[in-house]
Image (cartoon, rainbow, N blue to C red; front, side, top):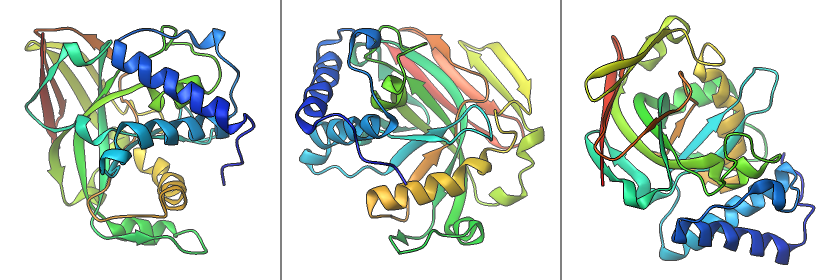
Length: 262
């Protein structure tokens, strides 16, 4: 369970507003010059950003990103702005972002509601609630000039530097996938840039999901059918620019594509 924030509420409000203003103005913040955060502070800032950026306009968060670098490290989670969730083949405008980094990922989609309850859901219950996996492209964007090595928890506060989310091929028989041995390719402008096998940080991205889903159920007062959670990059982040086309391919599973316009 996430502990309470340590920073006062008015300072958390101010820091969230700085991130929102940096997003609006396409200006950079430097995390090393900002107040230090705990993990709980970062999640509190996330909530304030989402409340002001989309929840006050009646948009409900239905997509999240989760990730960790090791099975021994507690994952982190961040909401994805509903206006930045796209189907495969979408065109993203470079003008809407400060940078765009493309990541190849596998996401899981809920086929039934998971209401809040007193006890955590078991892994078996959570598996039963998932109705599909998807190939996705997560794009990275940041309001932090030092986003590649930010001060502790500032990357998490900045919505884990999420830019957008492009949803590709759906796989209903997802439990039959042998993801620890899965290959992945990333193509930029029809040129193969990355080809790897079994390269997810945890081997099997499902290992993130029991913690992540129970965390989100508590945080969101339950999850709904159709909610989708992506599970971290298989190949790091590949920066792209206006004019580029991107294709992420998981051979034998499917792909997701996007274009970047000026």
